[in-house]
Image 1: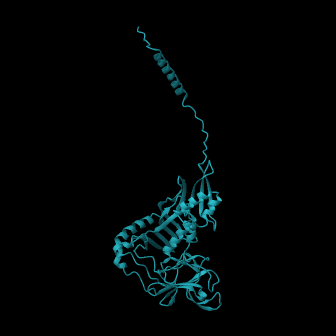
Image 2: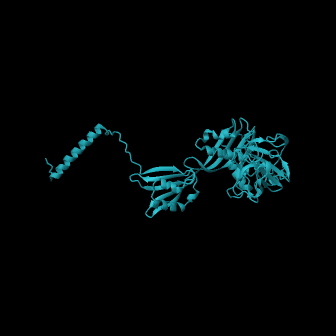
Image 3: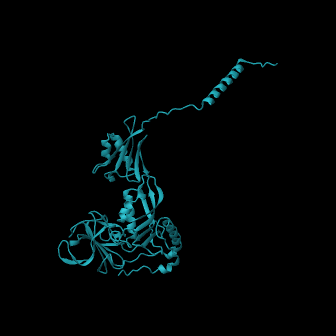
Length: 440
């Protein structure tokens, strides 16, 4: 029999070590995986301490820095760095200023000044003193697809809609305003809306991380009033980003004049040949329409044109007269004040703010007195046939047809009545004379 020879003590140790390892592995395999208890949470102190203040009325940025016990040298450097991005004199009360302090030592690390929801000036300490940069709020682009029905008003339906719970109250109010501006020539949302009316729309938005909307515009919208559907499709013939709205047939839904100078406002007194004057208490003609609104509410020009009068005028108080093409003149009375830059000779665009609701002249409450005249004759703004906007240009008909189809298909993904493609049977030439410029 041959007896194995162990050449050295290390070899003997290797055999013994292997035997021990085998025994340990076998023991672990038999007993299963080891139990591990819960780990204690580790709390790490924040790297900095934040101190947020809001600029008070009449307070300056420098006073905020001084109140935070920041040294004179740092104050000067901070103001110089801030001026590279913005003017500290233009900071409004309520501006949020966040001071960022080192946690371990009482030393200023940086300052964030929120100029707007989209821009923040960030001031950081560096080797040379202080540097500045503008931090822009990131956004994502999405598309809203919303539908619903009316119980009381369009405003209530939109602002209380559960599908819009992730949006801010102000954004929901803005959506209502956009719908009112699009459909104002077809539906008076302050008087004609019925219970059971329905709406649906798609809107492209730029959304901030907090859910608020930087911007947004309707792509397609529909409102069904007492069974009658009205639709509007956005199209940009000039490719300048402005665009306008057309119906399914390519006719403009807009008119040369807005229906009212204040969106979603209440009519307090209509056009009449014989009205009991609320101040003088005798009967006389009322050649306009009064729209009631709180003092300071913006008043919009109802058309493009040139300001031909902007001054105080007797019972009408602060009055603006706006001349539009083809003999049209609109008048806006009882204003609290005129908008900045509004004076005789100023050119304004439809929808531009020209003044603010007030109580100047002979009034019993805040409102704007609105008149519409043609060639000197007063007309009822709510009953006349207003000049129509231009239809889709003939040269853009092919692109319009493709884009309109896409936007209508998107609208049809929402509940609502079927949309018939009448536009397929309409030619651009048939729309060339759709605009009625007579207005009478």
